[in-house]
Every structure is written in structure tokens, then in C-alpha cells.
Length: 474
Image (cartoon, rainbow, N blue to C red; front, side):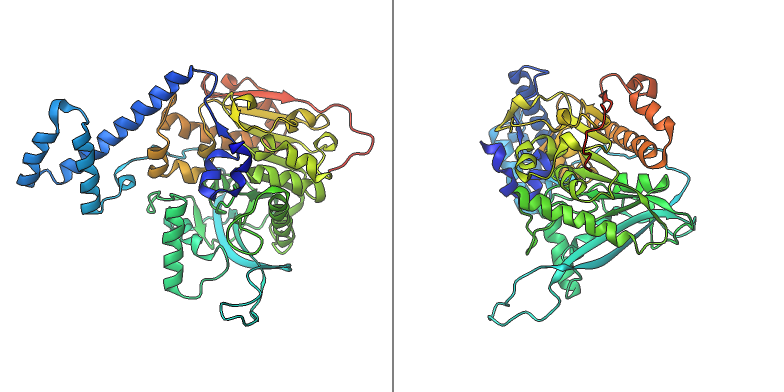
């Protein structure tokens, strides 16, 4: 039953598993996929060790040792052990020597992209301990901190674009403003390690910090991150949508009274309340059209957005990036009030490959949310060459992620391209549901090849809504 208890694990593990472990997909025999993974890992180890050997290759004593160890060009045990020792001695990070092929080259929309980060507080909920370490009552503001990230259509300017390091720095304020610069720096270092967020910080992004907002009004998209995930984990997608005329707002997934996220119904409801809080916050923004709202959720966020929609009728559409709603139907059933069979709002649901739930260790087979939403237009897009972690651009940008999860049947380049198709299908779904653009539906239901998608990348299953229920619920 291992998969059923992943909600109690660290956030970085949940980001890669969505609460269920894939044993092996049915597309290849188990021993073939295992062999490929092992060979890929060995190749990465060999390349990394070879790089290390070349770094110190000029040292004569090292050269002589290398000749002894590099027998027949194979990775012997002595060479592997020696490489690890060199790593310890030199302090060189394996992930620093690895590479990632991720490039988000999806064509931007007609708008420049602005970005702003603010710290809001939900006064209806408390956060943090009631007493300090000495037993004295905490008198500071204990309202729940909500780090709020906003991407929006902006006026064109000559200001520099942000780099990815600017997003990584946001780790420092996930629980509110840090007390000191030293504390902020330490928090960023710790979180980068915890999340293996080792992407190149100099990579240029599309947003400009504090750019002047465009004068128009735009539909609102709330982004709900994975279990314990940062608000910027899909910054590439958020920037992309803003460039096409959407205001995107996100907050990190943190616990009720401390940083660590909690699971179960309580955890889903916690994040659902954050989603509704962000919608309320959007009322303070002059450039938001509050009559058109969608919520995107990745992993755990793709469960919490169902909980939010069940209680907040302002939400008009849902998108799930390999959402946990598919893997934890019992949580939905046990909530009593989240009733997919009565929902009428449209849904776009991305899944990883052709993985049947039966192949997941400890899978919850008590229901099927996608099959139950018979009164909603449901678009299911199966991403053949993506695993759960690769629905996050933070992971795709991470060399350490690819070392831990080497490519199997598909290359990094193909997975990167698949991420772009996720962005395009998401955009067309939002254009249809929030802007009433009929061209969006034509794109969604067309054969993928007609849209220019390679045959092996994805498949689309459109399930039109049946007649509305007698007593419709959001």
C-alpha cells in the first residue's frame, strides 16, 4: 500500500510520484525498461566521471592513477570508487556537470509579460506556533501568510527580463518576509537542495519584474502547485499564458501551521482555501475580469482544484496536470461534497502516457473521476513521453532531476517539446472556456497530427457533456 501513504512523504518525492508509484508501464516488458534505465544511468555515471577525470587530468600523479583504473575503457569498481572520492575531495557537484535539454520555445503571445510578488495574509486562519521557544505567547501577526505571485499582460518596455535565479530567490519568502538577509540566503540554499532546484539561474525568462500592467481586463487563471511545491514550479507555463492575455496568480503549497504540507482531505481543503483566497485577492487588481476564472493544478494541486470548484462557484473551468484527483478518488468520495458526477464545468486533464491505474502500486481503485464527470465537457490528453515529474518545468530545468531520472524511451528534447504542447493545449482550452473562442475547441478535438504534433507524443480523448443533472452543482 505504499502509494497510499505518499502524502506523508517529502514534497520533492510527491512531485515525482503524485501519490502513486509506477511499477512499469505496459508498453514494454518490465525487464526491457529496467535494462534501459540501468544502461542510461551507467552512461550518465560514466560521462560524469569522465568529466571529473578530465578536470584533474593535467595532474601527473592523477594521470598515472587514471591509466591504472581506466582498464579496457569500462567502468570498473575501482574507477567508480575513485570518482566518488574525487567528488568528495574537490567538492564538485554531479548536477553541476550534468546538462538539461529543456528549452521552452513556444511562440509567445502579443503581450509583454509583467511579474510581481507580494505577501498577503489570510486573517481568517492562523499560522505558526501560539508560543515561542521560551513558552511566551506569540504576539506578532499570526495570520496565514500567502506568498502571491502574479503574471500579467504588460506594456512593452526596454527593461531587462527576469532570469530563473529571480524565481529561485522566491524560496526565501514562502512563509512571509524573512527576518534578515542571512536568513533569506540560507532558506534559499536549503530549499534549492530540498527541491533539487539546480536549474541555471542565469537562464533568461520572459517576464519583467514590476512591469506596468496593460490597461485591459483579462481572465483570471489560478495555478495550484504540487504537494509542498513552490508557486513558480511552472513559471514557464504561467509566463506563456500571460503573454496571451491572462492574469495568472499562484501561491506555494504549505502546511496549515508550519511549512510542511499535510495530506488527506485536510490538505486538499487547505490548498482549496488558498485558491479561493487568491480569487478574492484578484478583486483588488484592476486588470482582472472576475467573470471568467479557471484553476490549473499540478499533481496535488490537481486534486485541490476539484475541492475548490465544489465550494466556489466563481470557478468556471478546471485543468489538471497529471492531477491527483485521478489517483485518490476515495478522498473525493469521503469529502461528501466534492461530487464529480454533478459537476458541469469543463475539464482539461493531462495524464502521463498510457499508464493504467492497475499498474500503479497501491492504486486507489474506488472510483474514477474522469468517468464520473458525465455532465462536463472533458478533454483528456495522454502525454506518451512524460513522467509525472516532467509536468513541472522546474524539474525539466534541473540537471539533478535528469541524473536521478534518466530518459527512458524518449529523449529530454522530446519531453521538452511535450511540455510546449501542454502549454498549447492549455491555452486553447482557456481560449475556449474563458474567451468563448470556437477555434480553441477545433484545436482540442482535432487529430493531434493536424495540429502538428508528432504521432508518438500524445493522444486526445474528448468526452462531450451529457444532459445536465436535475440539480446542477459547480
